[in-house]
Length: 183
Image (cartoon, rainbow, N blue to C red; front, side, top):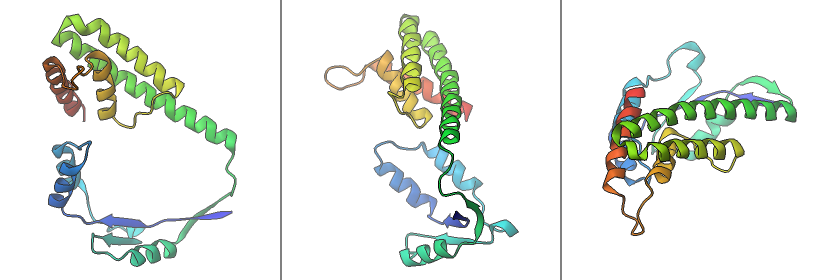
């Protein structure tokens, strides 16, 4: 058996720094998401959260390692988890994720049809291609933003010069607004 430890690393990075770092990222998180998350965070304070360590960019790494090593054991797990059960769990998770992506893709197709009906057929075909690639494991998408980009690439690909079609930019804005409303 191997022990499972539990502890909370409470990241205390100022929102201003988070926003600055976000601007340097290739794939940016929308500002409203960062500010919403920051306003909803609460420091650990209840009994089961007592084993916590506030961490900032100035926290020495050895202090973090020491904290992790000293966290209490909460459960012992067998060394070799049941491979069959793991595969079944992964399949179930993938199925749920694929289902959620399908729902989101259907809303994208609806927005494309409202935006410009000439692209509706390509949008639905793109939805089917993406879902099949996800099911077959040919495509790995981790979030709604990645799904949106893959969808737009199929419906309105970038031109040969690498510049987006103005319609792509407009559609991107429309879909982004829909995604924000769904959050």
